[in-house]
Image 1 (tube, rainbow, N blue to C red):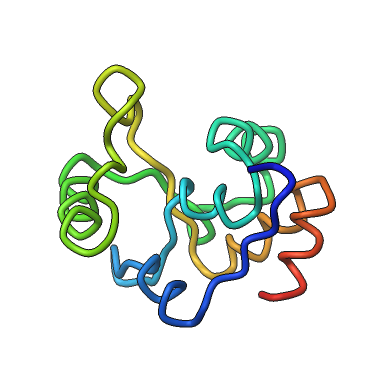
Image 2: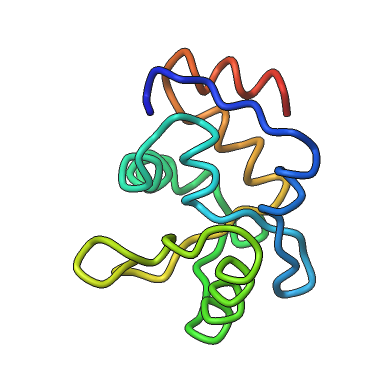
Amino acid sequence: MENELKILSESDLKSKIYFIRGVQVMLDSDLAEIYGYEVRALNQQVKRNINRFPDDFMFQLTREEFDFVKSQIVISRNVNYFQGQKGGVRKLPFVFTEQGVYMLATVLHGKLAEQQSMYN
């Protein structure tokens, strides 16, 4: 995954956008896939640069929000999303607003993140 640039069509990209807390957001796992990172590594970079991600750039989902997103994913595109890791996702995911997605491109290192940021 780390050496393959993934360019999404407009419809694929739209399917990865959710409306939560009155804003459009993308899941950390979807962004990790787009940028060629593991979710763990992406979130680690965010934590190292947390001062660049105020609440209006990124937030962690509540259990209720997570269940809503989970139902949308299972219905729309990826029934295997929550498998693995001995039962699925262990922590509630982070989501990024539009500004957070752009900031994420600036803190991620590597050729793929740089190339992908040109498509944002």
